Length: 392
Image (cartoon, rainbow, N blue to C red):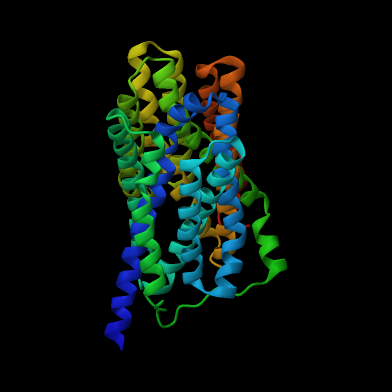
């Protein structure tokens, strides 16, 4: 019996890695495919930003509902619903010919991503004895998918395939994900238990001054990163005259920087300190974007380099919260994921509106402003943390 449970745990863990790989790939495909969509449909940058915002609205809704679904229907149900939402969203998005269907389809894709985010974290915590190691591996597979997806899209589109095919060709992989999550019985590690739910206590802990600044950090960081990931290729193609396949390669470098930065950062965070390394990285990301946009043509390489510094901020923020709040950590992480969704909505939409109003350079400059907001919130967080490091 123990061998069977171990085998199920191994399969569910591998399936979660695969789901996170697809999650990262579908997140990264927005950048290289959005310019082709806008050109085909004749949409403005504001409309494109609104379509992308639909995905993060879906992510936000999933963050709110996934815990309820898990409690009522079981952990596995979250991931089955995620796969079904991916299939419906991808099929709808790849066949849409109207703005509303594009937005609704992307909402479903974003909802699926949020369900994968929470569902796979549930799996690791439930079935692994050392969840910290496996949660970091989840982030690695997300990064691998995000890094490879732009290369995949650039190769297909450079060979004459439609941006729609880029999405449709991923449906068999999502179908495999659905099949595994349906067929394999869910294993639960002996001794695994969920946190108790005490509403008043959770609200008290979740809305301290320190946590409010953490939410601002997460919101602003995600807004900046997703803004760059969404609009970098369009900026390079239209403003810098880069070919579509080359633009996709530059976006892959951005995600490669995120992967590399998280690996290197894991050795530096404890040495430097959470707040210091996050502040330094947010300022360095600001410098990369600002100089990459305002500097000479040769400085454009700094734009994808910003991914190296973006990389550390989110996992370090989660670690900072985890060390300060051992109780009710699950609900607190749920709140953090909600602000990830809000930031993901705000970043690409803001850039899209500014692109129409003032041009691509000014629009993408909003990402630099979000980096400064991240650094400011970290400064305020540090001021509040000095008198009592473990308080709040």
